[in-house]
Length: 274
View 1: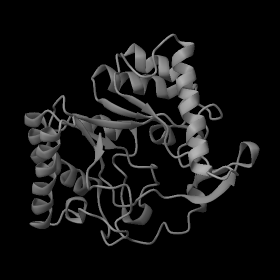
View 2 (view 1 turned 30 degrees about the vertical axis):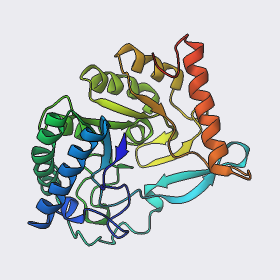
View 3 (view 1 turned 180 degrees about the vertical axis):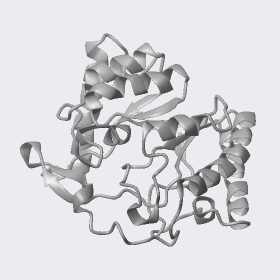
């Protein structure tokens, strides 16, 4: 799986396909043609999947907080955000306008992906933000309801999600109680193409990103649900906490990979696949 030139970064940072997410006539058509050529090249190279974001706001966060062992945790407290009234170059965007941009893209790209048998995995909006934040009526891919609508546009077995469990949890009132049925909804429909196996403490509009064994969700139970629905893709860490180590990022990721491998082995499954 590779990344298409539709990144998670906000529109103010270097963005390789601004016309697509901003809905600019002409410009978005040229960019979509480029995406289609990449999909065709992936088929020729034998690569069966690509992930992407449909993102203008980037990944909003507030001041980091401290967690277990002094780890620095990425944090979102909507009531502490100071930039909520600052518009992006997109200006004010209604939910209907953003859905039009998504639909325009999917109706042109998904048929190409289907013909070439390349799965397209879209990452949710991280996080769900309050209505009107930075001019957006709603981050439409920021919650399960929006993602359910998304995967039913241009229906195809090659159109689905980079299912970030942490991001989906960020939109919930009670992630521990709610996440299981959401995994089942997408998993039973074969719309999960990749899993970011990430945990949080908190929920809608207020959370910290945690190590997988330290958040509110029952991660062993979640892994069993992915198995239950027949998910056969990758399970990977994402957004690890910053720790006091010579190689902070690498060490934290190593812990998360070890945790995932341990869960597989505890259930008697091969972590590296059949």
